[in-house]
Every structure is written in structure tokens, then in C-alpha cells.
Length: 466
Image 1 (cartoon, one colour):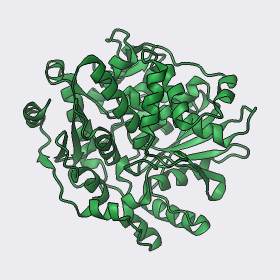
Image 2 (image 1 turned 60 degrees about the vertical axis):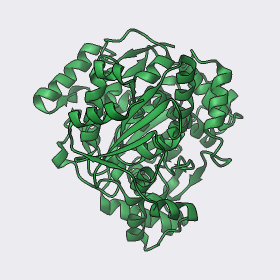
Image 3 (image 1 turned 180 degrees about the horizontal axis):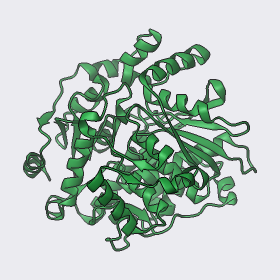
């Protein structure tokens, strides 16, 4: 399996090299030359597999340059700290089922891919005798998941940008309380998109990138996407009966388009998926795009601070991988779309919009703060289950797309403890925190505040990089 760039300027390269690159040298994103195909017989053969074994099998379709036994060891190590179920499916009201993705160390779905990424990065770096300085941006959960997966690793340092004042107190504590020498938290004056733009600017400076061995753990890193593909297969295998080809639909709370892109890949590989339902919050740029075909990111000042903060994103970096497929894998049209965006503040695929649902199965909807509160309350009253605000966005939008005979699976985003204030507002319940979580919340925090300035970030990296 070889990988190319969405912008056409990268020679095909194997998974391991793609893993360390982050952004492609031409500024594009790595995609497979072609998606691997999975048959109905493959799916049936996979039913008895444990989650680590399934992960090694599915990721192995992409990472063909890594021996399967090494992948099996890495996936076993990655998920060793998870409970036995790893990804439980839990029915709730209205015919919906939650796919439990928040059983990892930071209580968020990002752990599912990040724990594997920590293993495979260390494997590749040790094999090649290299070091990596990971530069990432987070709107809340990516940062803590990355830092907890990479903390203490000798060949890796982590530089994580987060927007000042835009995360929940729990999210800040999970990141800023870490005291590991290889973890550097940087709070940027601005919103997530400003942090992401800084990452892309430095990643696009090839001389600086090479000199400082910069890599990425955001969902621009293809290893994140491929590891997330696994739980779509896992959930389908547990929501359907053996011997059938039952279609299911997935609803995915979406900010940077990475999680739902993994579902898009799974569908393209042959998984029987009827619909991929994108759930946005008030920063509903992606909902507008999938309803109209017009992509119109908001400026930082217009990006709202909401009660589902991990989705407070206006410019979704993974959308480029979808656009690449939409335009028939024509890199010139991808580059042209971004040129239109730079010149006009938007690009327009309204003529292609009917294909979004008809050909690709993608539909969308928006949820608001009031919707979140009402949904958390309704689920709690009906089932006793407490869901976090992002998952509530998913449940609210999913209800509009439930079809008879088609299981609707909603991807859980995080444990409710990460957003306790919103839970209390919704249902009047003060959540219990374990002694370990209370200790984390009370721990001293270590963070560097920085303006939205690429030169300041370059200077900081130059001083602290491996």
C-alpha cells in the first residue's frame, strides 16, 4: 500500500514515511493510492476477533510495510489499559445505539487512535534511529489524548497548541497538569483555527520542518484516520447478525472532519453503511457545506465558544480528503478549491451537492446549546444514561435520520465528567469524580502563553526541540 498527496506533489510512499510526515511536502494530505477492499467473507471471518486483533487486521491493510506480528503487538499494547469491552454498544431511547469510544485514559474517543499512534511512532523512530518533535493543535480532546499517549517517550517531544480560555476546566487540567519534560503546552491567543493555522504554517516551511524533525498527531496524520476506521468495523460487527449484509447508519459529532472521514473510508472499503450523519454545533460550517455545497469558513472572531467546545472549529482540515474524492482525485481541482477559498472566502461545489447523499451517503444537521441540554435531559430521563454535550449533538441530529430496519449508531465522544458544568445545567446532577480525577483537577498546571505569532512559535520550538 502506497500513499500520495491530495495536491499531487508527493511521490508514492509507504505508511511508515507518511506517519512521520504529517502534512505532505506540497501542503496536501496523504491518502491511499486506492482504498483496500473488504468482502462479506472478510467481515464474517472477523466477527470472533478481539478489538486489538481486529485493529491489527484492519490497520494492516494500510500499513503493509510493517510486519503483521509487530502490528499485533502494538495494538495489544495500545489497548491493554482499556476495560475488557473496549468499545461497548449501549442502546438508548428512540432506537439509537451509542458506540462507546471513551473508555481510554483521557475519557475521550481520541484515545482510540492516539494510543496506537504512540506505539507505532515509537516503533518507527527506534527502527530508524530518529527523533520527532510533534506539533499539534487541539480544541480540547486531541491534546490530552496525544500527550497521555506520548508522555515520557525518549524519542518524541510534544508541542501542543490550544486556544486560551476555549476549553473546559477538565480539558485544561488533563493537559496542563502533566509535568513530563517531553510535553510542552502552549496556550495561544485566539481560537482553534488560529492554532491549526500555526501548525500548518510551520509544517509548510520545509526547511524549518526538516531542521527540527517536525511531525503531526492531529487528524491530518493518516495513522489517526486508519486507526479510527477500526471501530466502524467493530460496531457494524456487533450491531448486525452473522451471515447478513445489513446496512447501518452512523452519526458522528464533527469538528475537524477526521472522525467521520474514517467512516467514509470504511464505507469506501466495502462496509455496508447506509448513511454517515454529520452532527455540527453552532459553528456549523460543515453542515452548511453538506446542505448547500458551499464551503464558507468563519473568521476567528465569528467562531463561537460553545458548550461542545471540541467542535468549535470553522476550518476542517480533513475536508480536503473528501474533496479529493469528490473531484475524481484530481489534484488540480483540489488546489483550485483552496485558491478560490483564499481569493473569495469560499468555494462552491453546489452543482455536486446531490452526490453528497446519493453517492457518498453523507447528510448533516446542526445542534444548539438548548438542543444539547434538552437531549441530555431526555436521554437521562428515559434511560438513566448521562451523555456528554458533543454526544448530545450527535443524538439530537441522529433522531432526524432514523429509518425503520436500519440500526442508527451514534459515536460517543467523551465521558460526561469532562463537561460537568453543562451536565449540571441540563439535569441538576453533580457528577462523581474518582480520587484520581480530583487529584488531577487540583494539581499545579504548567503552560506557556503565547500570541498568535509564527515567529514566537518558531523561537520556542528552536529552544526546546529534540
